[in-house]
Every structure is written in C-alpha cells, then in structure tokens.
Length: 190
Image 1 (cartoon, one colour):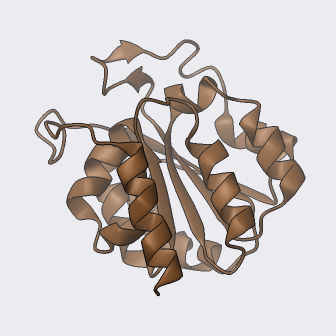
Image 2: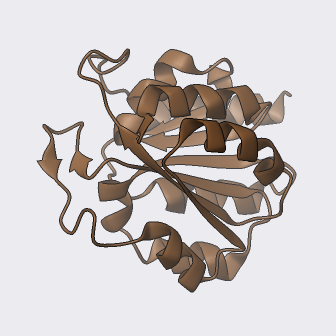
C-alpha cells in the first residue's frame, strides 16, 4: 500500500502546468501540496462528478494536460462516467483513483465491495487507452514519468492508506464556483 500523501507528492512533482481536478480526500491532501493552485479545481458538494467535470475541461482545453484526483467511493457513485470518458478519447486526460476502500472524508465507512472489484480492469473494459494499478510507491515513482508521455485517456488506480494526522484533513471544504472562476482566469491569462 502507498501512503496517500506520498502519492499526492509524486503526482505534484510530475504535474508541470496541468489542470488538476480533485474531489473528497484527495482534494484535502492536494490543497496542502499543490505548487500551482491557480490551476487547481477542487470539486465540493458533488461527490462522483470529478471525472465528468475533468472531461469537460479536457475537451475544452485539448492542449492542456488534465489530471483527475478521484476516490474509489466517489468514482463508484458515477461509474458510467468511465465509459463516457473513454468514448470521447481525450488524449490529455489522466484519471488517478485513490483506492483506500473507505469513505475517509465522511468518517471511514467502508466502500461497498472494497477488495472485490478491480477499477483498473473496469477502466480497461470501458475503453481507456491505458490502465494501471500501483500498490508500491517505488514502482509508481519510476513509471509515472513515462505514463505522462502517453496519450489518454489513462487510468491509474493507487492502492493507498490514509493517515489520521495527514496534513489537510482538517481543512474546511471550499466553493466550486470560486475555484472555477480562478481556473478561467488562469486559462485566459497564461
């Protein structure tokens, strides 16, 4: 298993000028680590919709890399979005799912079927161009740079563990509308 905060740090190191759409627990970690917050779009109050919002951005901004930081429970709430993403074939789309088997942000309730489904296999069967699953930090670190060079849509399942004392877990959730205005301003004035 990979520490969720360490996975976030690795993604941040490879990010460059990508737009990052995040939701739930990954959003909380990302808010503490991101080095380019004007291109961050945390989604609040719309669990399950990160990949849908990111798809819209990927189609509207085909020259910008779009990263989705999703949770397993969140993705399961809108599983059909994987087929929609795959059918649109956005070359600039990388979908990271933090698979911890629980609804960590809302109190640690277990995700139904945790340990029984294979999200990378579902992504592959849905038509994503590439799908990966990592449970070892060193493997993730060594493979991520080459994955970033491939055409999407790409799916990456990260088998993670959360820490009760990780940075950002106590932060207040924000406002999606304010985040969208910030992204629009950053895209118009690079």
